[in-house]
Image (cartoon, rainbow, N blue to C red; front, side, top):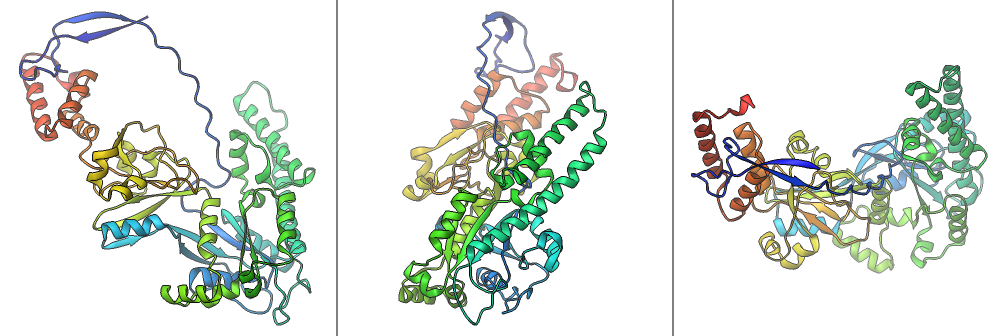
Length: 509
């Protein structure tokens, strides 16, 4: 049993509002303890470096079209494309806009002065060869560049061209994929064995009583599990079954095979247009056997190079004439999603911007890039779906039909296609957890001044907390049209009166 002290005296100045500063009588009320809630399921941790500013690297053997693909993707000539191995030595970086029909529609609706889409940071990495894990062909340097990125675009050559040499002498994408997979895995084995030796040397004589010793033993066990997956199971680390505690240890090692891979098969323009190539079924079978679930996207660097310099209208005409469309948008989306990145929008006449965050990020943290005050002063917000906004055409029309009020900072922002869309200069916002790509597109934003945000400001102004009854009454009054500033003035007068009558001031409580 628990007992609550409930104020029963009402203020004469504010009939519906129990003054939080003057209470002359109390009523003892007996209440039953509510049943315990079932424990919430543990949120699955994500493999990889935490954060929003993630990068994806282009990896493959020399002369498979990596730098040409990078140039077409970035619409630059940063990539050192040439018909000889190791034309690229130092990595090149570019930010690629992520295509999004929602963003385009929002820009058309708000007609902002500034438009900022979501971006995918892409790195062009030099070609790897057999023996790279032991340092062959500047392998150690190139593998360090792979270690620095968070995901991989693996480019595989599946076209014959006598004028384009191949480092292995002939075209065999299955062999090429085996080489890259083996070199990444061998480097991870070397990395893990060194780390494991160091742990075992410092872990001699560990006890079972110390928490630090127990944590060290758990780390050793996890690293041994990683080693077994790489050596005995012949699997990439990302394909292992890991607990959240184990994922923390895996992430600390920045392993190459823990990074998500998107396979990009570079076809001739002819094969891409006719959607037929003898290697594609074999490549798909290899992926299903060795890395099931990894995405496979056919494309043609030759076609992309022709389309890259064209205007949008010229590009559409050329695609229509060729009977095939560019795959760069699909590739960019796949790379963005492989990093577990999602986005939300801020919209207004001055700017429409897409903000990139990690899937599962909660609303206060999702808003952190805009201001640290968002996380500290977050209370709640009002949400609208993208479908509703598009159907009704305006914020006010959506509010009149399907406004949903929400209020818990423990909720997540709805991922990729449930995007937050706060009006500028709004302090307090809220969202739900996102779903994956392909689901309904949503937008979340604040509309009218939020009553909970106003109450937070009032509470800060008074330098005191408000009891539950006062909060409920204030919310009702604000929703019924009472100006929050006027309400704050009334509450200040109540406080002065309460202090003048001898009640304790907020600083004395």
